[in-house]
Amino acid sequence: MSYDPLITPAVDPSGAPPDTYWRTTCQPTYFASLDGDHQTDFLIIGGGYTGLSAALELTENQSGDVSVIDSHSMGYGCAGRNAGFVLNSSGRLGPLALTKKYGADTARSIQNEYDNAAEQLLRNIDKYHIDCDLTSGPYYKLAHTGKQARVQVDTLKSLSRQFGSQARVLDSKMLQQHLSIQGFYGATVQPGYGLNPLKLVDGLACAAQRSGARLFAKTPALALKQNTTGYTVWTPTGRISAKKVLIASNAYSSKQFHQSINNRQFAVQSSILVTAPLNAGELAGIGLDAPATLMDTRMMKYYYRLLPDNRILFGGRGEVTGKAASAGQARLFNAMTTSFPVLKHKPVSHFWSGWVSVALDSLPRVYFDQKQNLGYAMGYCGAGVSFANFAGRRLAQQAMGMSDLPDIPLYTTALPRYPLARLRRFGLRALYAWARVAERL
Image (cartoon, rainbow, N blue to C red; front, side, top):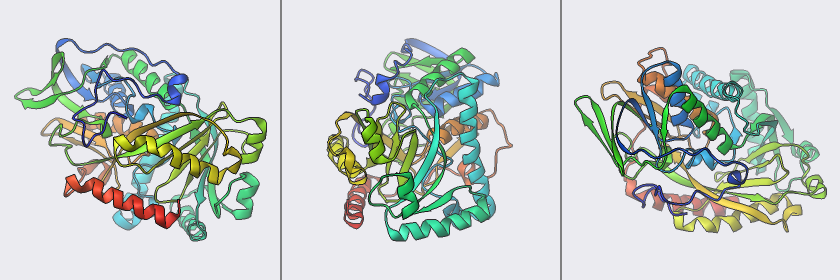
């Protein structure tokens, strides 16, 4: 992996796209780079879920000229590399943690936004006729210790009472009836969805272009400066004048790009492997015969799903720098075969890594400064497929001056800055080392 957000100044537009499994299923639409001077009312920096959804909201409301630029290609970052889980959540704080921190009413309002995000994503897939291999199936949250299994039981009682959760608890025996999986003590299960993230982002890009947005690939924003009429953005081959700027580059933001986002996030690496297709015996051996999504309760969570063509996707965190990305494949494979011993000789067809944006307080933000006419959305903590799309809409609504958004910290407060930002990776190495010992993986 060549790009490292704490070392590399910016994404190299001439670099090769990531060799993901998704790129074997989809040839993304080509968009030309910007050439010469350009003027726009709204400039969106970043062509992922957030930026493209913001462009759709602005153009559908006929709010003015809308332009989207990306350093490489639409979906080059996390939008085209993730596992394709559609979750009713974002950040790292669950409903009960939100209640403890912000109170019951605010927690319900935040959770309502997460629920609305998932529902809107499903509606938009239908609205824009996006063929993104959407599948429905069970979503399992697997307890990796007996203590976590007991916590799940107690937590679900509170979630059912306070938030109307429809999840069910499975004890270890019930779990084995659902899955032939080793090393877990129980689970919760509820309806879930999976999709092809690159097909989704390509569908959104095409929809945004049809709606009137101008999209430019291989157009990194090298500098952003405020002027008397708005902002000027310099690119390698041109210059853009914009009245308002929406930063939607998330973990792929250029190093020290602008004071509004500098040191307000920590880009953390996540890696994914995909196996060759499983045969009938292997599918029987893992107890899955239809698409499903799974995640465990470890601090360094592993997440996995059965893909529509019967491959296993298995992902997780653990490597700290871009140079160390390749080391994650062996760790992930060992973790996968510990859970599913029948796969110990299964070939791996693809392995890749990407960066997710982590907020200091584990809560994402969608924040637009009306006085500065500049805003951002980021900090999804690796759970952004549904909410990143929704956040783009909310960011655009703020940029348009809409004032009826929910009065919750997601939208009313800025991302806190990381103290001692240069020491972030020292702390991350220590955390990962401790977690590996504590969780025995």
